[in-house]
Image 1 (tube, rainbow, N blue to C red):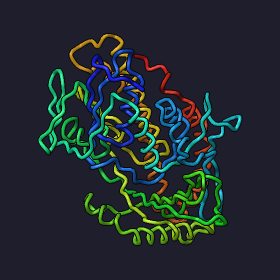
Image 2: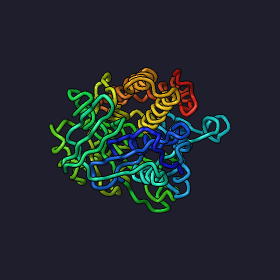
Image 3: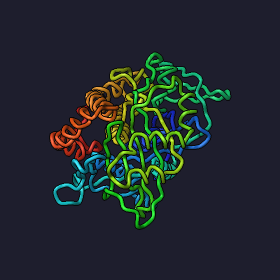
Image 4: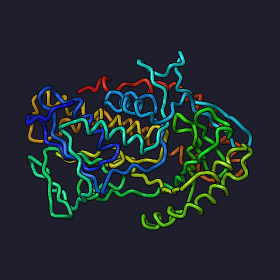
Length: 425
């Protein structure tokens, strides 16, 4: 347990989701001796949001969660399902390819080895919350809506709609794609836009004798979208069903909430798109899934401003993009790499009147990787967009080749350990 320290920075984090919580853990974990920060997290929701779909935590993501003390909690609570490999299918013809996390000896990727873990967003958040609760230097307050951010030479103050305020030396904007930190302070003109695709998801309870076509996780391509089917718990008594597909823009966030609340309409849309699948379990899984939700996938522009002198954006607040297979892991990398840059600056004696030195070191280290991820996400959008028979047939030839061609790149990234890698600062 990390003790509080009056000598550490006073840090404010906006956002009590996975990005904000792991940022708090990383800042605590990497703090120099005697300089553990005092961290206050503020969340707009009345309580942490533990609803959502299921995410695949890749080996590099699990490595960081292990370092931050979260992975063992997931194991102790039996959260998630270990994923040895992803299987890729064409719903009309069968299996196309697979992407493995088993490593050369079958134990996982890296040293020590990790495979992957499919876990609900709710369970992942619960595990991280438990790790945060064990830290005496971190407090979290829910139900706080920020209305103003006032940055001065030596501090930054956030003002809430209830009249309260909080002041710190560093403000971390970890408040998602519609970030108040970005929109009210860092870059107000950089607004989220609809990507053209939406994610429909639900969870289908299954009987012990229900036969599926995959071992752990399947990515199922069709002419009008991609359907992910995956186990997400060790009991394997339910399947996560998530469709990523091209959907016309309804024009507003409130409009999307209204459309997304109609579970029966969302289910019917999936049946319209995947109902002609030749894989026998596809239609029954869609029919069995409970409480379908539809979420639009928003994105930011590829380039943008991440910081001011005392405010830094992390995760989706800085660089939200369509899902490209490693979105959650990228957020964890953000938190760890930024914390290491800040720690290096503190070890140097905190020179200068503001935080520009560690901010610039982090951005120089991180922006190239994010730009590559943006390009990868564009490929995902085009792959799940509606296509005719010819376009779909071409896709079934391209996808296996692409997975083979990029295998070395993915393997290298899965092995990377950003907790110890050279940050050149």
